[in-house]
Image (cartoon, rainbow, N blue to C red):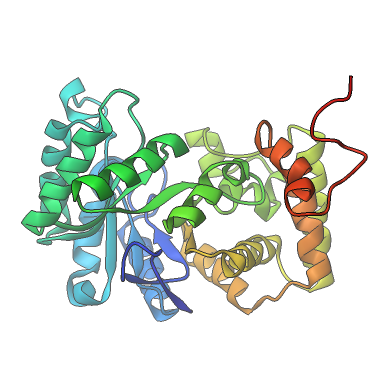
Length: 350
């Protein structure tokens, strides 16, 4: 496994694939028991991984508690990321959720206790609550960095305009910088191509990408069976064939996999690795296996190389409409670069 610097706002060095531990525990009614979770964790480290992603609410806190045991011998060699915002337990009251300072301080202290560590390497706001001022979030992060309880901070599932504003506010006020963002991204979900990824590249923010297999959709398994634990019990964050484009995407993915004698999983992750290679900042898929076998099957993507033609076909079939103003900018770009498209004048003729 290769390593990279975590964006241009930090010197943090992380493996090219992160291990998501949302399946560590069974608090949600599905997931991995302790022994299986340990097998996944060990397999990831054996492959050279060092970047662990969890959250206070994963499996009602069980994910962090399990990790506290697993990370003990390797703590100094690992980059440990966790999150706050969402409540840990279903019966938590309103004051135990949100981006506000009260919840921020409470959540980081509780995560430190569950993880049995004295610091968190990367602390995320899990999702925008749409009400807490960005200044409040940034000042809270800065205080925690200065206290040594967290080393770096990032924003997960925030709109691009809030992230860009946070980046500027941190710079002009001397707060600890936002070093990365996290959002869903895969062949099945490329909405981030409109705003989030261009912003991350422009500002030098690393981007960690959750659900790189579209909740299992890109494995192709839902074509033959709907009896899947995540799809049947969780019921969210799972892509299915609901449109002609999704059918065409899966057809193309399966065809490319057959051409190189690989699995659809390998191809989906290999496409993301190529996307990361072409990016000017760090793009890091987060793997979320429920079994050691799923992890091993996913890691096989490290040996897969896609041709330029195969990449082009996957790019085309998974592309999203850019919308306004992005498509307009693309259409009129030739005029600004000295090669005007005379068939599409910038201003309409009268």
